[in-house]
Image (cartoon, rainbow, N blue to C red):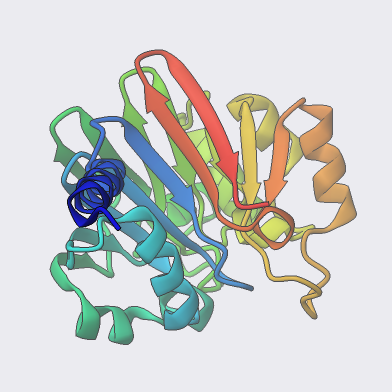
Length: 261
């Protein structure tokens, strides 16, 4: 056996694998398959952000392990849309395994977080301001309606993260005039029938709509009426329960979408 030859082959294979792990400079937005919950990873070069963690650290770690270099155990920024287990349940485990530079659990409306040309604009925070202005103070608001709404933008590409907001917050955001056409919509509240109103969708006109949802969940998500409304506005709809992790890659003006299955 020619050990020297095999050594060269193994070295080349290792270098090729290492090259595949290295950040490519493109924007990667991944919607993780975490069951009935939300978690999305945003990667740009060496920068990594996470929007919600989902309920299960095992499923979250499986997603992070695929999308981050094996040697990287640092996350720059973590947003929690609202304090419910399907959105923040894996946060404690995440803190134990990864070094997190900043955790934002209570956003303020009109705040903005930036990394180079990547922006996270806060359209709705955790203080009910936008609902108060639309419907009056002391309106009975659920934790879902109070979810952080985050508009990610990178040049001409955008993602709207909506947590579990319902039609009431959607209408308030429309009235406020802060919503813009978006490339990708993280469908509110796992595709609930009480969200994704037709006026909301017509205004956003998303190219891609992602439903983060668990297989055979007890809530009946996503609702068939919601899926019909998404189809009506001609959004390509993908679901984590059917497609696994859903990855959107932006390089130049090109948008590519990949799924696990």
